[in-house]
View 1 (cartoon, each protein chain N blue to C red):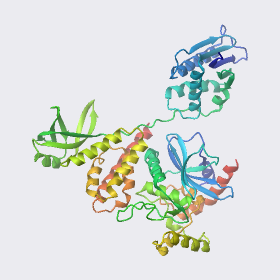
View 2: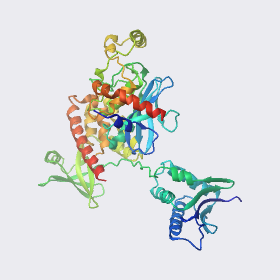
View 3: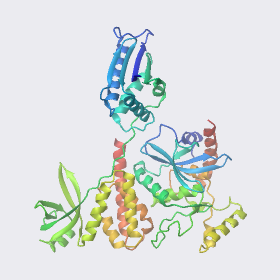
View 4: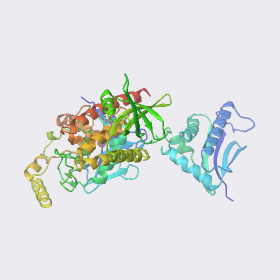
Length: 317
Length: 225
């Protein structure tokens, strides 16, 4: 069977002498160590690595990872992703970057080859000439802090106003709120209520802050379903498009009352700036609208503030 | 005043591999006949695309999948943090927009009474530049991008304007051509690229006129290099 492997060779050291495994200069031994570590990292990050053999051979200093054609094809594919800055695998990019740094350092002579049967692909020049390798950022979905809860309202009040809810499993939750909301809630003491909250984790424990309450099960279900769907969408751009279309579903039929209720879910500092921006774009013709104008303005102020905070955070990084 | 060397240093190949992962730029390419075509350069999460209107259709193309090499000037006005919502907005336009070619520019999505103006309700006649300006203005939503009223139809041949209005009237009998005519204006791709150098908005014609000769020279030099 034709052999398939990724092979690194250190042929000459800085004094142009042939490198021998049993007689290496410190520089050559350092290079050897870097290449061996990199080869191991690269192989370890292959999905299919079962049976790959690492070889160290004389005749200059040879480090090779030998495997099946498909295993070496995977290494080649991953290598190309790294070269074109399309890989989000930080460890893999770091592995190849170490090899690149080594090839850039003057002095020693190397070769780097991907061998698949008859085909020998030298990757030395590609690596050396390529711009500094870097990891492509991962696009993470936007997480929502909104939760929908239902349960029996068992207490209202306090100097720092809050309400106490006993959920279906008998678990008691304390939810902070404004004085106005507390007064409103008081009328529903011992009733079953439907609410939305923003949840933030403080030292590992969830802290609840009241967002809105719903007398109409329809709103509760509709908003809950939307947020569930939003949260289970893994691509942030698709998530934002969902927000846009949801807003449009109210605006197109001029259902401003429901839309105001929907927007309340996002009038909070935990809302992602791109979510706020998407809402501001779709509502831009409603700046002076009698039912939406004021709410949109609050959202714009919140957006400006959050953008400033995030920009500062990014600068510090 | 912006120096020539600054201008030259900031007109960048869209295929450069030294770009930040997220940015929006005003992009331009030379057509075979020497005229220019404008596009929006979108770099989102390390992927580079041009978003543009060809006169026939709206396209979002990977810069590596096309033969033409676009150059761009970064638009400071769009914070890189907002690239997800910019990308989403462009994809929404891609799904909905049906512009027709013409020297016409208006950026509305919803009209004053809150009705959605769908492409079928009102003709979206625009040039490649008008398309870029509408998209970016729509995204900014709370600030004005180009002071487009500084530009007029002076650069357009009068008989062309007449024929264009006849065509609009034939395709859309309900359109009031007198008010439509007021919005006929020609903003060149080089005006758009020059405007990207402005540190403040709205971008004015007097700012653009100050630097556009230098921008054109620098752009042409890049293309030869």
